[in-house]
Image 1 (cartoon, one colour):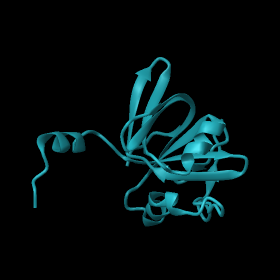
Image 2 (tube, helix red, strand yellow; image 1 turned 120 degrees about the vertical axis):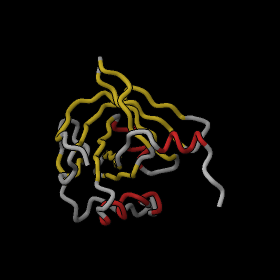
Image 3 (cartoon, one colour; image 1 turned 180 degrees about the horizontal axis):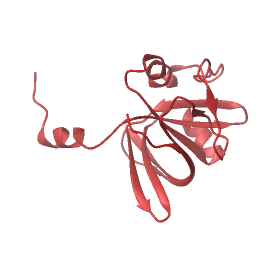
Length: 150
């Protein structure tokens, strides 16, 4: 087994949690576990989210101009299973990953998992399509719920 290089090790030690980005538009809603979340400005309050490319959440965020960010417990097998591979569903027959999971709306109407100890409702202010396996969304925080960290 090859030992990880110092850069990979250092990045792995950055503060992190497990988050799901969610969105909805015209009755369709979905979400996926994101690669990374970080604050990127304090005035105005902005959050940057790295999302793996090719997920069905992309057009919902684009069209609604909003996203939710919900912290989940990595030990929550149901949430991890529902949102880890949510991109594998058939776009002609979208499956709602929120079935059997209570949700609420904060300000914009995007689905927010009720069991999330920390949740953000954001309006998209920037989108960066990187020449990489991820794209970045920068969101203006409209509302927040919780604050206790997992």
